[in-house]
Length: 334
Ligand code: SAM
Ligand code: DTB
Ligand code: SF4
Image (cartoon, rainbow, N blue to C red; front, side):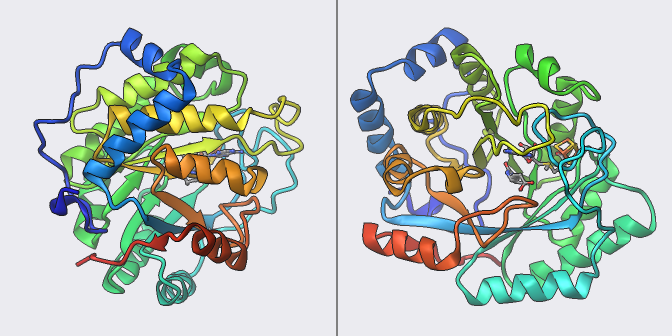
């Protein structure tokens, strides 16, 4: 393993082994490789870049819930749908910091604060978010936010407050995006990602599987991610959580092996990045989760809740990692 890559406070990785010129057809071909071969290739690369028995545990908190003006067909927090999510204004920073402190005490090394905003606000609310970032950062954790679109100025201020990473997903291929999200466009997502990168914050960017997209859309998403230069340091792969009240509630369940394929392909295309098995673990068997780890996933969300939907319990996760002989990644932040 490249020891420069082992720390939790991952920085941009200059590495001649990384490619940013992947062709869409190459990605399609990798994705369609027979599964044993695909997992073997992914696992071989995984071992060159990462400790194979380590998984980073991250915890989410919803700092502002529901009532989002955006129309994202998968999202229970969109004001366009009634998914029974109770709206809640911006949380008190001291409360958020104390939740992070408890998580850190349980070995969680990355704390991610999410909000149901189209874009990060200006003024008082943004100052409150900065206070949260400063507080969590001072605990020695990696701090991530996902607040919607950002201006360059806001990105710089978040960086100054101690933000390590910004999550902003591309979610699916450029071609399928408009069938799922009607209130903003792919280019706006890319612009925020550029502002984040420019400010020196690491990028967390991934997508969702199971929204009715074709295999070529999954490859299209992975192609977009793998041609970003540098690659996103963190790549969350979410399985759609089908929430009653959203337009995608009745989607057929995703074959778990598609998660395995997507994770393995991400691992091959972006070998140095952390690949996170993000939403959907509650719907995956321990065997499917194990295959995802074999395919190169090395990060998960822990805690009873993601933002608004359930996640496996702490005991369940501890038991799973223990039975696999895997350990949480230790903190190397600050
Ligand atoms: N509003 C900000 C934004 O859209 O970037 C941040 C919060 S939003 C909830 C963050 C991400 O959560 C989305 O980009 C999407 O990938 C994921 N997400 C939301 N609802 C989901 C669902 N039902 N299943 C899986 N992932 C979901
Ligand atoms: C990401 O890719 N997945 C997380 C995090 N980044 C913000 C969010 C998952 C949300 C799942 C639906 C919910 O709990 O509301
Ligand atoms: Fe709003 Fe983000 Fe949900 Fe879209 S994904 S509705 S922007 S909270």
